[in-house]
Length: 273
Image (cartoon, rainbow, N blue to C red; front, side, top):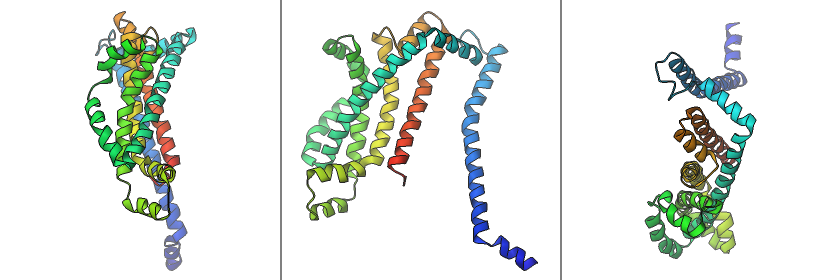
């Protein structure tokens, strides 16, 4: 009986099944920890605000913020702000990302282009896009175009720098093999540079989406009459702090949502990562 018991324990299928169960348990624990931290903060915030340990005028209870969110959503005001901000974010994001990827791939493949554009990029990158907002307003006016261009400018630099780095770090052997097989410029661009730079490029895009959210809030605070940033700023000036927190929570939510979406794309495009 003991020998049979030992054989069952040592059975590879049983061992693999136990290891799979352990992995599943660890994944559930990680998910629980991920969910528990924001819940703990919200419960602590609610408790401190309700008991007067923090000033509820400046830190209203989360339940009251949720009530304000529902009221603003029911009235339709909130979704107007969300809609215009998302339009500006997506338009500016695409306007910044697409040229950055194309130019970054070309700079990574062709050193003359890299040497020509690198000084310009290195000189302009440290300048905050919002510092250029007066010039952007002069060139494009105070309408939607200026806000979209502002977001595009802030997204452009992290994406192009990461894309160039991704192409430059591709193993030289792939380029040599492609050359020996008579690859043309199109093949280099789409079959080597683009897939080879994807891991680093996506990290740049991830940074770009976070910067886009930061930029839209600041841009809407300065020169807009709608949007989440406008909601945050006007609520602060009117001391409507519950509405201000609604705007802040929305920005946090969309940042987390966009990050999850990009990670999902990364998993699909780079399953080995």
